Image (cartoon, rainbow, N blue to C red):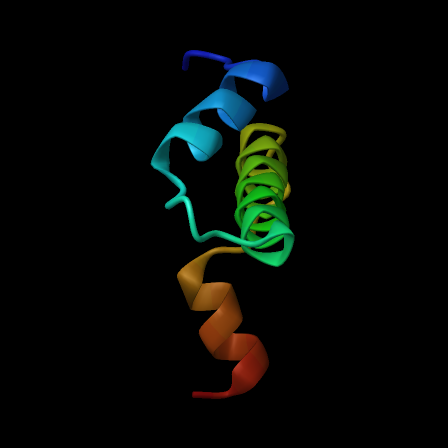
Length: 60
């Protein structure tokens, strides 16, 4: 997996944002990317639950 720097992520977000984007729009993009990165890190570290386990816990 290629690890990107926060700075490169910020550049990509800025390039794709329309000129009418607000600070809130930018913060939301950053928030979503941060959550995705944390989820990927958790998965890489083995902190995951299988689909079967989720179904068992939810009794679906």
